[in-house]
Length: 112
Length: 493
Image (cartoon, rainbow over all chains, first blue to last red; front, side):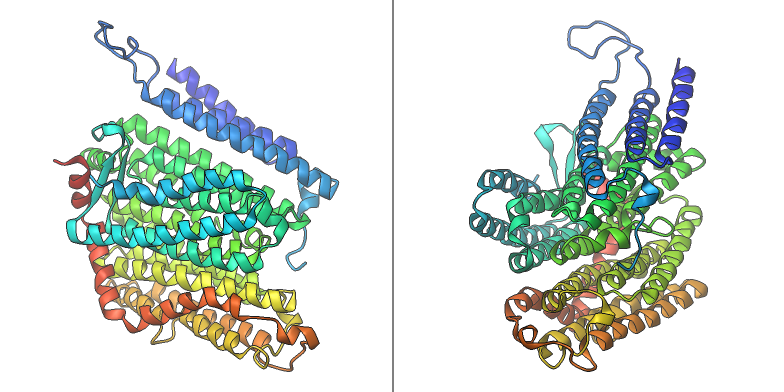
């Protein structure tokens, strides 16, 4: 199962790298979203997939699942959700004021 | 257990939240935020005094015993950084009162400013790797908004790149955290340090060390990941640029120094040599960028890069003397760099431009501005008896003792080129024929100079009182180089 997850994460990372390197504002944002999903999945996978009972008092089991990664990922998801929302607004404002969503037209000169 | 450590984090956060409700009253916001930053400054001095007399202070949040809960740790290095950021916070705020336009002020400038300080102080004081990520994000999200604040065409274009690069680095931070959690099963920095020491730092742990170096290097503008900095710092008004130039990259440097003096210390032949190589590249290419520019703000931005290299040099040499030099240099740099950006803001207010070729002869109408600028400029270049000299001296002395002649040679050339580009600014802006007309000659400059004066005074004091300050940085460096002090006071073994 871990191997499968890691392959999936590899695919997500390569797709997001491709999207970030494209020329359009919106695709770059999609790439960032994919990248954050990949990173969160990696955090979940590397800390061990579910192996035991829920870590609750009263559960009688030999093994307990680690609750920490979920808490970490929840925090990270909230942060990346906020950043993505901001990034979308920023991209929209940039598009409005520059009348283009092509990154190579957003280069500008160093000395303006 | 000392709850005072929470004040630098919670105070700006709570006050910032309250200030959101005072959107329509800029005057109220000014007074409250000024009071907040001043209180923070006093508290940060008091915290440092306690840490200096009683040793490292920790708080276990909600009573969870480390390594299970989040801890806040105040050691000498982090409390020194909190003092420095509070000083810059106060000064830039008072400068912003004079220079920020009303429209910007109304759109939540002060709350965002305080949130930025929350994130910076949190990053300095936390003892937990994931919590460090969270505070980085608090700081970065506030900085995203501040850097695009005002929404000019230029700002929108460059902020998008700034945000994307920083989000990219943050995601790699999560990847690094995932790896280290997978291997050590803990996120408490002191506990990670214990586990890494038990595992012997080889193979995958070295790879993780480099991953963290890339992440923090991207935030701290190390070679070759500094390309985003000059363009993005050009956009926002000078008060914000000064705050960013003084503080933000130094948070990245702080994180590098923290992780590479506490956690990844067992293979310095590999990791610290890489840091040394990056330091050389950062210094050299940063200063070359500065020499090629003809814009006040851009020259200063490129100099941030070259000087971040000096700090990394101190860490790369990895001796007490070099690390003390790096800490002294961080203190000097934060103060002088903020002052120079504010001088840039003052001249921009007078002439309406930051292009060196369009300014000339300001010295005649504004002598105080010119000479005070000169003091900070030569302090940056490292002329005795100002603060820049003594910190660089310690770094170079240590480099010679370690027989790293090549990097010392580079750092000396960089010092010379720094002097050159600072003189270039001085000659273009303040010397020569006066081109100002009528109104421009009599702008009230005193309110602009007042906030900068303490910074200029501090660089002179840091230079003249080099002896006590250097012995203080020596103590900070010795505390950093002995991770067991930090580990024992967090885990209480």
